[in-house]
Image: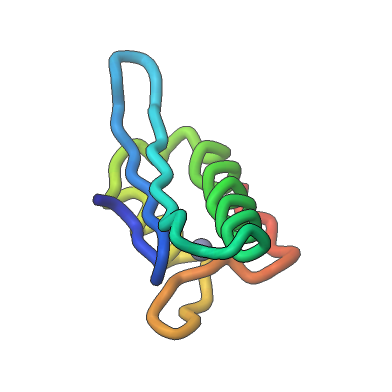
Length: 84
Ligand SMILES: [Zn+2]
């Protein structure tokens, strides 16, 4: 699987001319935490799919390595940073 946080992962697959982003979230959480986790991963989807050059899991890793802060071993884009 591609880029993983403590309870979720994203992975990118290229299918012909399309990029397909898989998001896996651990659903064994209470509703509010689960909703927050899904929203968090959807934000990652906007970030990753917003850059057409990102086409592999390695590209995702590089995307966050360049733009992000590392928080408890997990890379995150700082709020307000323009990542496009
Ligand atoms: Zn994240």
